[in-house]
Length: 88
Image (cartoon, rainbow, N blue to C red; front, side):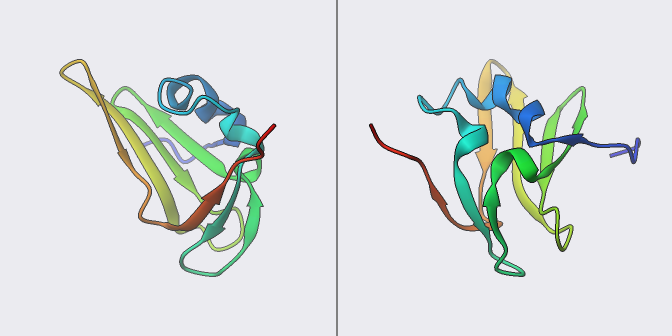
């Protein structure tokens, strides 16, 4: 990312709503690096013309990457140990 400014995890909601039926910002995830557990809205999101990078707000490690390419959404969640959504 060329711009070091970031947004909160709510910035990921639009793009990720194409994949997840539930509100992704209220999902709780665990960082695979430091073990911090937090709602996605607390993460740091870096956006550019290719997509977005979501980083842990505690250790700064990449927890997710989303990019649109050739009409497809590519999603990498390997930085999350798990992701939990509330069920109704």
